[in-house]
Length: 79
Image 1 (tube, rainbow, N blue to C red):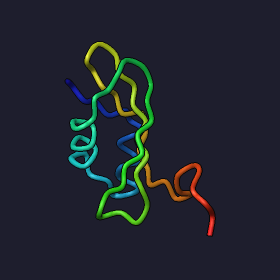
Image 2: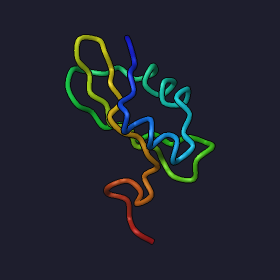
Image 3: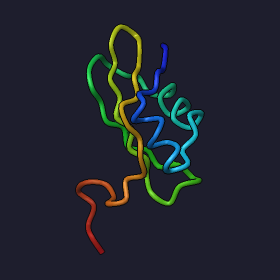
Image 4: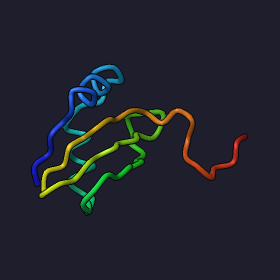
């Protein structure tokens, strides 16, 4: 599996201080299917969960964007 980062994803990672190693580690543990997918993952060094949007084609994973999900997850009660 080859992982590529779009220009937008690289800029978001730099803006939010997300290293490519963290993103690669999350993606390598997931079993990804063909097409676009959203991944939301809690990471210890971030206050909020990370949202990663990827596109998978022919065993090539392209990271479209990644950022901290400041609004929380869907279906969580607002306190």
